[in-house]
Amino acid sequence: MTTFCMIKVLCQAIRNENRYAKRFFGTLLTQTPQMGVFSPFWMVVPDPRKSTVFGLTQPFCTAEKSHTDPKRKAFGSVGRRIPYRILHVINQDGESLGNMHRAEALKLTDQHDLKLVLLRENAEPPVYRLMTGQQIHEEQLKRAENKKASPKPGMVQKELSFSSAIAKNDLETKTKQIAQWIEKKYHVKLTIRQAKDSNTDMFMLFDQILETVSEKATYLSKPKVTREGVSTCILRHMSDKELKAYQKMEKQKNSTVKNDENEDLKSSELHQ
Image (cartoon, rainbow, N blue to C red; front, side):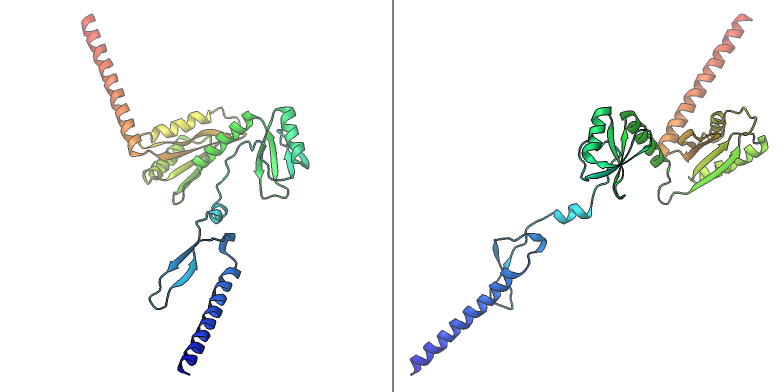
């Protein structure tokens, strides 16, 4: 009787163990794997509170990172890599050609020896422009200049605007204000409007202003014409390295001038 009871208890224990094992492994196999990847490898995970437990290893995957951290596309030709079927195309003169299939747009690039540049990807449909290599190069230079001229986060930029016919006293006042801002390491944007019936060279006027603060300032953005009759530039404080180079140059210049004066003096004494 004792033996029969022991066998019965043992059989019941085996049936319970098999039932629990089926439930455990059935749950693991029916769960949706993370990131769409199922790993066939098993590993033993020790748990001091329980007996040995089996778990699935998680494979290394970078698919999510590639979507959450996209790289910014540089301005330039997209070649033949166009992921959209329908495009809105603008020609090299800035005129709209309407919507067309990408095959038709690529045909235009081949026929006219042009390049296709993405302008607005978020538009519906995306906007592309046909451009020459020279146009792309000029636009890249323009964007680089604008990026350089735009104030960095935390940088203070002051602005002054005046006419090319500004009076001498007013110009001196503005120049002193510029010097104070440069001393505080602000960026200073200057805008000069060409006065009516004025023949003043605005670029020379910019250089004249810079000359008064040349011991500390230099051009961040060189003088340029923004529209008819209006020119701008941006001044900034020189870096320590630039200041040392400027001081060295001034020292050499003064030394050269002094030597020339001494030579002239000796020459005049000899003639006497």
